[in-house]
Image (cartoon, rainbow, N blue to C red; front, side, top):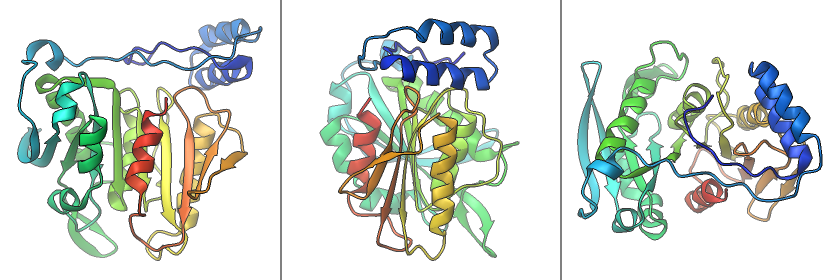
Length: 305
């Protein structure tokens, strides 16, 4: 069972059946099939609620603290210093426990560079969430070396360990809602969010890869993960077909139907997904770039639960 406490109201019997089948495919066995039998009967169409999960910092840290905007920090993980930038706006302090968003830069970029241009600086103040911008270590991609993330393996992955420890440390220091920890990233950083959802679904509630695609790693998430993908149809570095394959993988993992609602903002939102596993795919007429307004769409998608 997931370590995240959830209070769920099933939306109709069909959605309940989908969720039981999702659990059964992941080895829940007799319990899942018992749930399936119970849910097969008439069920009122109601919404979905997720119970907040306050971190230890909500109980041990003072309620009154000053905001911290763009503070450079270092965390030692398995003997390796890892850097990140922390953004704690005043609104996130006032609305406890606060969600956490982790934003990963692209290959040969930096946490500081993302911080300077990020939409989430404004959105964090407006919507009351905390953002962490991790700094990658040297990796080799496309015959070049630069700051980035390990994305081709999950075994002994230093960046998965970094994220694990980052969430733990921030949860002890700040008042976080551990049921609302999300990850986004561009290009190489977007690929990493897929690994996080595959391997750390008990701690990551949603991902938003931008300019990224599918990567061949084991992916058996212990619970559904909300996923919104953004990609440019003229992307010359990561072909749009790889991004579509990523969206298809998560539609399958989350038990979504093949039909979706096409919106005017370029996003298709798929129906019938298990609770907590909603999937959206957004295509735009651009190359390997972060789409305008993507930050707003990402946060609205994460919070529309």
